[in-house]
Length: 138
Image (cartoon, rainbow, N blue to C red):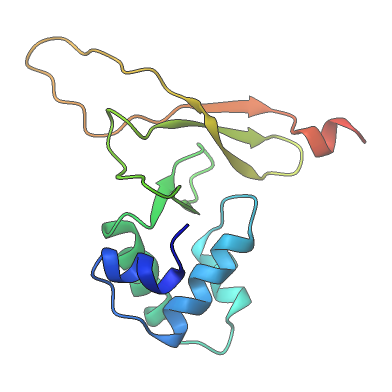
């Protein structure tokens, strides 16, 4: 497993204290997070810096964006070795209707979907909605 510094170097991301802090924050989470979640965790930090860091992570394949149908963009760390390609790295997401969290189900891959000739796939998103394991126990 690569260190954070090695991961950043492999993606040509300059190491800064804020980038390290945001990466560690995301790594602690078992669920997706919004920009507001990140802003709340780093309330003394400049919002533009936080936004640019998340966008840099997304562009470099450190995080992926999740559209869970709530209208709020969420982010999660990519697995090591992920290149965020439609052919190899797509997985299910689960949105809990009770606690409103969205979880990456990285062990459940989305099968490759063939589209008609002339169509070009740019993104695939599959969200299962229901009650998560924590809420179903209550």
